[in-house]
Image 1 (cartoon, helix red, strand yellow):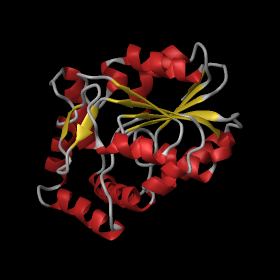
Image 2: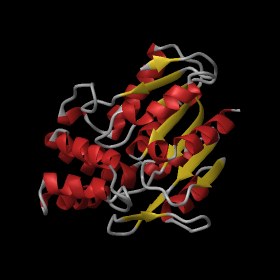
Image 3: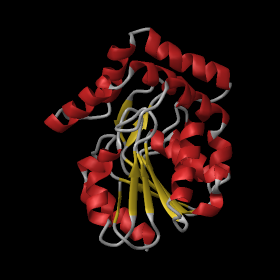
Image 4: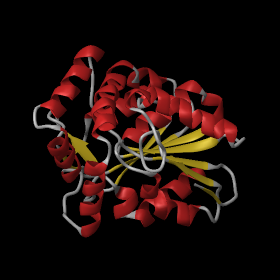
Length: 255
């Protein structure tokens, strides 16, 4: 989806088992002042894809290709959850095309030995079975059940099990092998909008203002120009749960 006019352009990248429609409130609001672009990654939404093509590396290259093919001036990349990894990978590949980065409720799911991180992530899925794992993963992203949250859980469960079961371990491997170098490679300013924190078991909880988290500490350590905004009391999808606050932060960052 491509709408609006105005620089810098904003390129929105969704999360794991999600789609570009998760940015609908941002696209509608920000198209009045910026060119806005939102894509469906391979194997998500309306974009077909084979399991072997679905990885952070491929996705980062796809985002760079999108920016190049649309002949956009330097863009602000906006990623949510897994999309944080994708925009960091895109920046690593083509930093000259990036004017800024917005990371919405990112986290790290793998560290240390990449082989071990990948194997551990695969075991998370195999033990309960894919459907039960995917449903549990998405239910804990919301701290209050609503019709909207139930729709997102159902959408995740409907996604291709082959793609989800292949992508999740590759994401953990990328976190272990590439996340830190990707953060160190960032030269553009970064806005972090954070709402949750994950423990060692991957369970999610609301993040309170001033509360430390390994993800935020890593960002402060590795990236040089970072502004962190914590929005307490929200789940993992602040762009849907509190769109006006997220839109305001992105608009201020663009200015």
